[in-house]
Length: 493
Ligand SMILES: Cc1cc2nc3c(=O)[nH]c(=O)nc-3n(C[C@H](O)[C@H](O)[C@H](O)COP(=O)(O)O)c2cc1C
Ligand SMILES: Nc1ncnc2c1ncn2[C@@H]1O[C@H](COP(=O)(O)OP(=O)(O)OP(=O)(O)O)[C@@H](O)[C@H]1O
Ligand SMILES: [Co+2]
Ligand SMILES: [K+]
Ligand SMILES: [Mg+2]
Image (cartoon, rainbow, N blue to C red; front, side):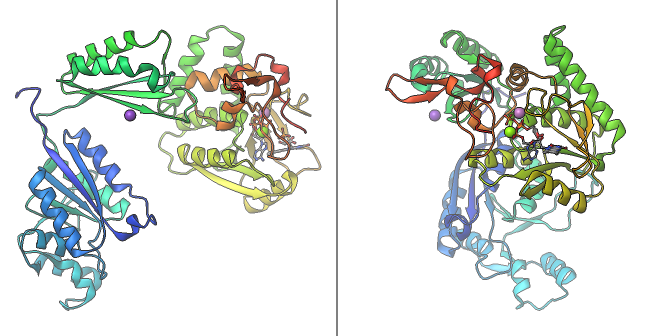
């Protein structure tokens, strides 16, 4: 084995395309490439975005190729006039482009033309010294149909994210540095950067030979203010730096944070249950899990749907149902359905959170506008397969004291089974669950809102109000509300 402090190989990434410089497309390819190169032990030194101009591409490729071990490009390999990557790379090495016989053959197979002047054939013109590299599918073990073009130390990938992502991971062997492994640790703190800057500086100075330390504030996180990332190739050094830093930070400022409570969601919920062993909360949580299990026995995956409007109660509900569904159907490829009935004046913060949750929980969101009862009728028409709607209703909600865990909608409503797994939960229980598992919730709750309706009828809860040192009116976060009875004090209806 070679030395642990082996100098890592380096890489530069060149993203090619006017659409990115005009802000019409968000570049996700460089992030994807960086994440993979990092885990493969390669240090990315620079990312550059260049326009679809031959000179620009050639100049950047030349410079990157001289400076870094590897150069990865994304984009500009299609058939249209603005796809100039192959020509640009050729120019960087003072080469011409020539049609590569294998590519000519491929294009003939796909498009049925072997006319060397056809625009489709443009994709076959690559730098003279180009090599074609075929990946091997990780699933079938077969050689991929379309090759990656490389020359010297430059590797050219398509710009379409799904194509780039599919292809890039197949070439791990080209990039992976077997002598390098990065270890990393994260510390989350709930004080601001200024308070800890001198502590960070001291730790950095002491370990700078072997450990890198980064500080990343997050202005919108409900759980921490700053994320600290320590990295090293030497695990022992990393551990000492990390331990020393933790004890130097102000007492109580380090918070336990789970960056992805959806991973092993079911196991984590059961850990919470165990840690609350025997409490009232644990009993209610256990009963909720049972209700959800029963519902999943009674109704098939297609027959269920989660009522999700971005509120705290349905956030708890969604997380519970998600965990149970994952457990019951571990390899299902269908999306869980959610129902969102949009009010006339939704808060933008709520809408944004609903979008984030939709992506995170991989939901098939069915959205309707108008009165709830009418929307339920539309739902019935468009999705006759749905029989049951999971809801985050609690007994203390208006008109809800009579509800049971399974209650049909009222006789004069479109008929659905309402499944209410968290009926008995108190306001505090809701926060114990969300904060105990680090589940993300709508940002309005951190600004004093304790229950959410529409913009025209919802305000921050007056009990949470205080005046800060500048004399400005502020609100404490919802989870700090003392009197559970006052939950709806910010609501007009
Ligand atoms: C899926 C679903 C089913 C509902 N079924 C009924 C019902 O059968 N009878 C009823 O009076 N209200 C029903 N409602 C309305 C709710 O009781 C309640 O008025 C609505 O969720 C607004 O709550 P909020 O004022 O706390 O925001 C239903 C709502 C939803 C989302
Ligand atoms: N517009 C809606 N679209 C879909 N489901 C809804 C809608 N309104 C209410 N629900 C369902 O009814 C439940 C009860 O609504 P409620 O407003 O009390 O709770 P919440 O929105 O989850 O949280 P909060 O009480 O903080 O507003 C929700 O949890 C959700 O399951
Ligand atoms: Co509620
Ligand atoms: K920083
Ligand atoms: Mg609500």
